[in-house]
Length: 124
Image (tube, helix red, strand yellow):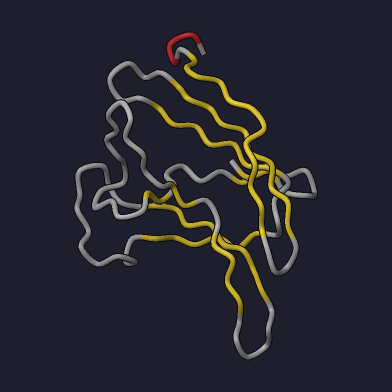
């Protein structure tokens, strides 16, 4: 969930895992994967920049070999913060990461502020 400067929130249900052929990732203890939160795109002709988030629209069991046919992009102002929730499939445990976003037109910095690992999904 992206928290924007005006106080509004924008939710992306499935963010994009880099190099994943399906919209979820499997992780073993000690594994790392990369989750794409924001892209900063610069128009080379005008020099203007904007931020976009990509929403993975694939169905759970479908495999899309064309890398960008299944993205929905959403343009944002620079968000104040991002909350990433990862749900473990077997136990439905939630891992929640709160991230602060700082930046300018030329550079973005994302820093972990807080995390809750795990939260019991059945208790909420």
